[in-house]
Length: 74
Image (cartoon, rainbow, N blue to C red; front, top):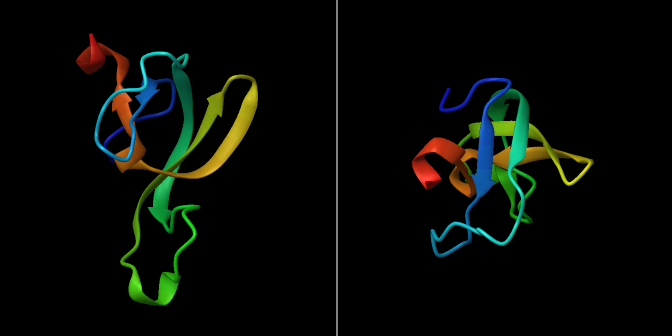
């Protein structure tokens, strides 16, 4: 797994840029499955997904592609 519970991460745009105007998120858990992106899961391979705490809200099924460690972001 790319991240572990307790890691602070930044959100990443679809172009791969850090969304530095947003606060960091906290990784709560991770696993293998399908992200929350609106796509037909029959054609997708399972991927690393995470549950994060972001701006006081739980966000589930967040793809690892949408996250980057705070340490790497600095």
